[in-house]
Length: 165
Image (cartoon, rainbow, N blue to C red):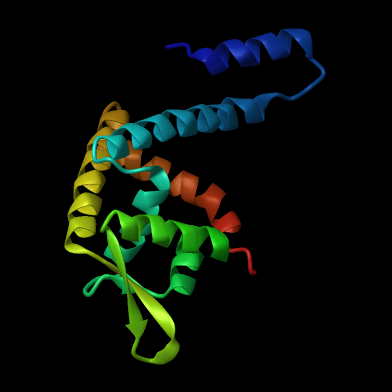
């Protein structure tokens, strides 16, 4: 079965036979898949009235376990945004009653951000919707193929994820 990347690679091989375009065969597919995944994520989240960034913050809190709270600094680490951006996001989620700010009992000047029951429900429902979308995307692969693909992608992404600083 031919795909758009096969056509793109064939055209480059014809036009630039002097270049080794083999990386395009893998990474152009990864890039195209990322765009399809982004669309699937947006669809799954919109069905639960969430933006992707809202899902990221809510699920960071949800993964923390009961009582589903983190400091703003911990949220920064997990979501890779700036302090100002995180403050804005927390404000917006609090206005929607999806999170609440509480005083940090270990730091008089600090606060904790806690998931509200509504925020927890919304995160759980959106996650279930996302997983359904992602299962559909992976449906053409067998279990062993999915395991092999995950291992291969881990090899490619681990160096980026484990860079100090």
